[in-house]
Image 1 (cartoon, rainbow, N blue to C red):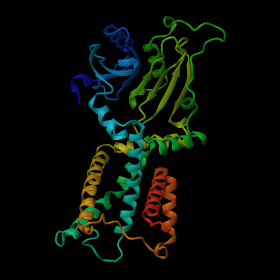
Image 2 (image 1 turned 60 degrees about the vertical axis):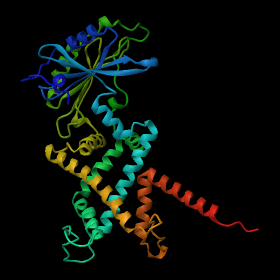
Image 3 (image 1 turned 30 degrees about the vertical axis):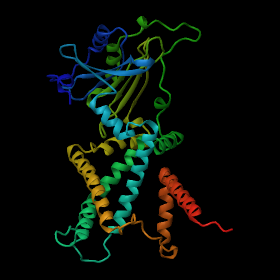
Image 4 (image 1 turned 90 degrees about the vertical axis):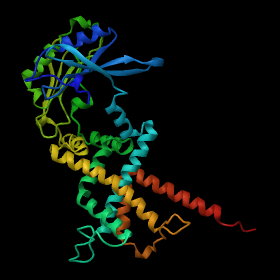
Length: 388
């Protein structure tokens, strides 16, 4: 996507030119200031910079600048909110509907996890030795039997991947994700620099030094590379805001699952190193959290798991279609085909407790169950004839 502005003829990495990048941005528009720069581990990818810009009605937005470090020119720009990837991401995360959209997505993800788990239980072989219709889909028989086989059997082989994609996606949700990150924080699972990033040192009572007194971006990058080769996994460079005592920070790309990681904070005025940490300094909880994204997008083991992730997502779509088709074929005419109430004595205790555990682990599942119970209770009260 957009190769004309994202790619260059790169052969090896360039370690300088960050100040030139910032200057080129200001030459285009003096009101645009770079706040963040992404540098890929692939030298053939241009540097990506984010500049905050003014939008209509006083709103603020981000404009992405792509800089070719070889010819030292701006290759192009993209509006961060209207680019193809951002639109797809907005649909994926919140259905382009803000917080309500995020809640709907989280409900769908939570119930998908339960649907896959209960589907696996329904599939579980009760008769030993049976292959057709259990391990291999049948290609002959009634439409109902064929639908059941092609709905369940392909999915059972990828059920672990499907659940993994769903569970790791919960990290980015409104309710579950916020609660999970809070639990990691309260357990001391995030490093100190993540909770409270170091600031540049300014003597108490002294005026804030002018921006002209700060070290250059290239000097900060050189200091970072004296500690660690950040090109191993690519890195992000956070630039101090004008007039602040923010520090420069350089952090390896967190999307690279098993590469060496490092983070460094550099005083913008003195150039001194304020904090430096490598993968060995990270709590195990942070290391676990950093695996969520590569598992979710399937990049954890490269191309093979990316292909599995795509197949799993396509299979989820196919299961939705065959599931609706089966319901339509089985439901009696004139009804919605809701199952009859199961006698309490026939439900194993472990299933009841498992349902409770899922409702606690997935809070929106519990809330939707309560909501459905209230609807059912209200409907029964309304339909009950009044006694005079």
